[in-house]
Image (cartoon, rainbow, N blue to C red):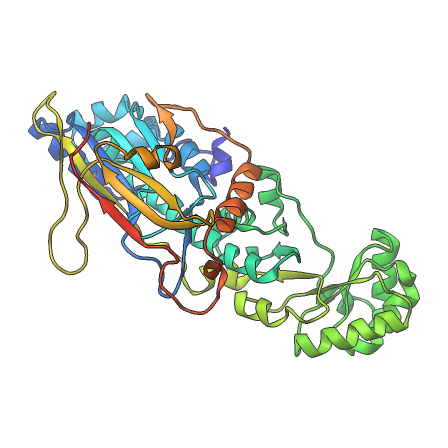
Length: 446
């Protein structure tokens, strides 16, 4: 993979500095203490879902695999670390040969998750695993937050397609990741060409108000757009008077006009008026696209409106109020002695930040109706009735990625996973996780 696909400057061909300094200082100390080579297990999980959310969505797994492959300390990176005196020479020598050689298991991209779900499990030596903490969390926290918002919006939209158009509302590189996550969560297209180029997501786009204002009249603007893009184009009709714009649009494009876009006003009222006007003018097949700072609640409120598609920007790329999934990366097991068995370890301090030790498996128990009824997490042997319902899949084996898949596979998986939840999962009202998390933590496993 080209490192430019990760948003890296061409002169920094690695992801090694997408990390916090303390990852390297921990490594330095562990190397000196002789503990950096201890076999260790780290897990990614969240202690709770964002307030009121009923499920989470795993997104960014494919980007994590790319980041792990490109986590290399080349000459420029090592020079920077040396000049800034971040680590000592023995640590620099160790980093120069760094290649992740461990194993990674995780929930497949697009799957849903709940509090405590071991979304990703990273196994290897302490030194090689601890370095990946920040970059893994950075990707999963951002992408999963966007995918969760996208999922809620696509659920609210029903069969009507959603257009991702938030590039101008976030960092230019985050915009590409957001478009990818939105596609996993159920969006149909994006306006961001970089996302289309990198991830083969369908792209769309026609014109903004500036194009209308450029011309001497709205009629001239519509004529120019239709002459260039054809009658099937989408004309923006709310620069001046909506009713006059719709009339002019149909006069110029005829009943074959593809769509009109409404970007302001009372969208419910305006959509009804525009639909009636289009039908009266004979443009019965012309679609109506609405934009204007939509979120899942606004989309749901338009369910009865004659709207054919929604364009969503700001609220999507900011996670609709929850821009992070609050995932953490914790050491849950390590060798008791060099070469000894794994022993569970866990943070036990007060303040709501405790964790459960042990290398975990996860399975989803279903009820008689075929819908999920509990997220079961445990250590040791998997109960016989859950062996066929395990959630973690192998992603990396011995440092080699073994689970590449098309983005459409993650998108389809999410649709199926959401459909397998109880119906209340799609409610937009605040609520608890739609299924409980149950722990079965006997034994520690190896």
